[in-house]
Length: 357
Image: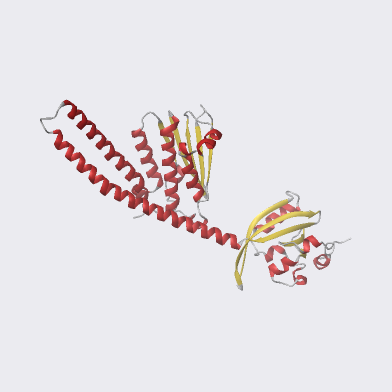
């Protein structure tokens, strides 16, 4: 016997289901070809159409026409490749604002599929607002860091320069006792160390090189500086995927700061002989992996004792979480440490930025 035509099938409604009709979400029952067999009360309101009009219509067309991910998932459900799926979609027409959707499909019976459709527009808008707020917060923080660096260099640096010159004048005196000469030499050494420390802090806060030439070159310079500062450990950088293109400036700033803090942790605690820094760009995120062959530590013990504060990792974790990222630590006493950080690139900033002229 020939199968019933589309119009006939559209009238063969599934048995009345109170839970289906009065569910909070928009729910739709289709056949294996995606034609609507039933739609609940929230679904009628969601589509803004009469229920009798919706019956027999292709659900995929109502969700945006072609191409859209609905039909790919429909085929996978209809052919038994999967028994459930979920995906995001977007509805836009000339009469109402665009809506973002989360669609969940479940094989309801051998011949029907149940679709749950949730409007995620408000969540998307809130997420976009959060990303924008984080970008502004990072921008303000960076400006404050630059201002503080300038003040540190211009004011404290000049005072230390004056102190050094004054000590040099005293050193030329002929009447100093041996004890006074030792005290003067100590004061000159401390002044010199303070001047270098102020320079290093100001340089780290400014990150002017990062602004001019981008993340890849700045990381190369950072590695070179640390190698010169601590020759006991061999440092290796792998960052080919960011060599020829700029990232969004706030992302570059976050990545640079995380590598800088990670190397500081290694220098202070790891007693490592080899350190590897890997920065890898994917389509929508950055992965930062800092590995060392040092002494390692007990993560659980450190977390209970000081919230990882003594290792400086709490700051890295908070910085990553500020932009929606995650930080994972893999270590054990005597086994070295691997710190892996995942940083998302905001959707509207996936395109690379060009360096400043």
